[in-house]
Image (cartoon, rainbow, N blue to C red; front, top):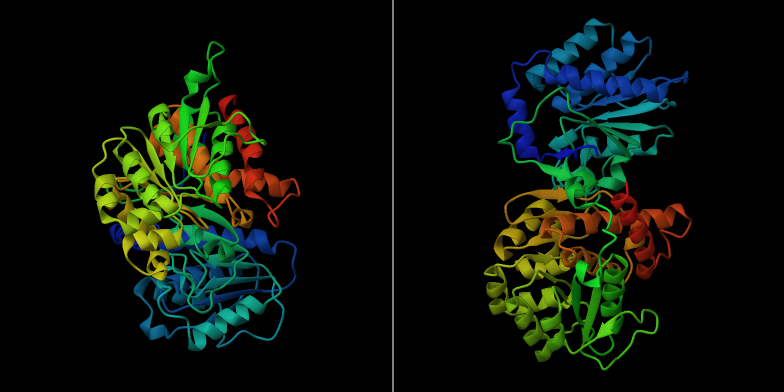
Length: 490
């Protein structure tokens, strides 16, 4: 299995760039060469000129290197200069001088003509999502987005916050993004996937220093040691007992979805302790109904929260689950109870047994005591803060779910599609994660695998023409089971 790709935030990238100031060839030359090679592939066979938009920083310098190399290849790029030459950084000014010396020319605006390709070198990682683009930058972004040709963004699409994935106002919608050194969080989460198109990573032949704080893109290599065929000499007790606690009156469906998902992902037994009177699931009669208190005694791991409600009984059950010396996953209403009852949160942070939390942004905001926008403005930082404060593995759900661990490691998941934006999808993820916990997976690997499988299952349904529109949460279980069995027997 291929090793997972590295993700770097802007501060780490700036540190790497500072350490490489004297490297030869310079990073700008390497980045420009990598992007120019991709640009040549994208314009192959077209008689139209490529457009290159160069901004006022090093991203503009990268674009000018691309323009010079395209010119040397026999193309005639149209270069729009969105900068003052006298104010360019030294490397970018050198790139401009080399382009002009090669016979290149500059334009003040995008001509009214057709292009084979538009290269976005306007801002790169220099933009933040805190302030919307305005003036000439916003106008150029609008012009690029209106073109009828592929768009290649250098590093990240201009207007996209490289750390958060936030777009404030407008941003380039690229068909392709050539990202340098490593992937950036903002490409993978929030608005990033809608703006980056097909992403290629160009490491520029750099080895990342081990002291640089890096994340990883979730891939099976991160949990491959858990993937193996089952022994023929096994029984239901070999694969653990999941306990699901939730299902207040009117919300039983959430608990049923979690329990069914746990069964389909291989738990030996699934005990369901719901707060509404129910003795059998006619769709999944293998599920075993017990009182919530009995479930606490019978399970080898617990998942608490789907449809739990906010009653006094729910508070007490959450307290008992936190006190139980078992792997524990809290979701949905259990997370809201943590936010509403600080004593529960304090007890959770002191647990010795593994703990996992699976909040969506609004739940994370309640747990953090801040607005939802503050969570979305720094999804990686918010997840890491929750993981540290709660002493728990955390998945901050959403487009590009972020997984953070108490030891500071973090990951972003790139599998999935909008079909997951439906009621019950999170309950299925809860059950899938609990099933892997019950089978003895370490908590961090169980969370990574379940999040990745959850997304892949949605992709499989879409590939079969059964999504993303109208994809129901219950439809995720069978493809997830098939994928897990495929991995186990690979």
